[in-house]
Length: 272
Image (cartoon, rainbow, N blue to C red; front, side, top):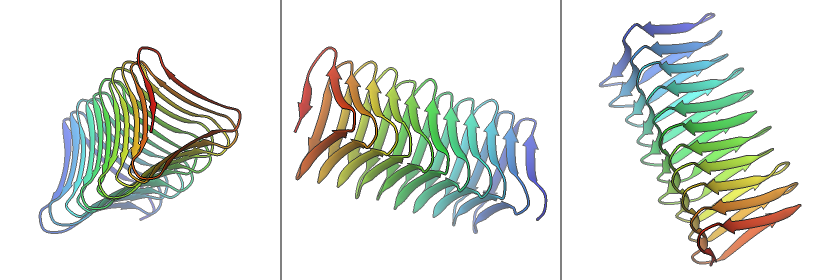
């Protein structure tokens, strides 16, 4: 209760429940799970909950971090950071929802190969009090919510970077990304695709909003509307191939306090 939950495996770490929930809680300090080859935390019946008063650290030195909850996945830190880091893939999957939050510091999710965050039933909610950082250095970042996808940095920056592409999708509701300071979505070798069943909203209060697809397309599609807004600085949308903004039923709104730049270096800019 007053100290650390520390699980370290020379090869891997496997925590699994087939008939109940999985709960790892350090009321006093940190939760640390470190596997030299991989970390797998699974409940095939209920929730996976990892909660630390200070930091929550899940690290796979060699391969993959898998956190799979039959109902939901909840990772929470009250007074420190939440770090998920894998040499290969980070895969978070909850049938009803995925929630990753730090009430005072950063949330950082990093996979050398891929980062996959999936809520099969409801919402993906990633909240960092100071910042949210989701990075795949070699391949794709894929965030999918059956209902909403929420990425929120209350005091600092939202950064989503894919070595290949960045895909954010909801099948039933909105995509809402909110940053106090800068918001950066970067695909180094493929597309930036944000598709909201109802709407897509990207907002920064004190910094710029920048979406960059260095190789191909920036595509924002919302059934009811697309809103990209910086209250204090620039909005920049840059695609090597196309830039597509599509509001199927209502309107597209792009607002930059200092300026708006929409650029396709090789092809079309389409606003519909």
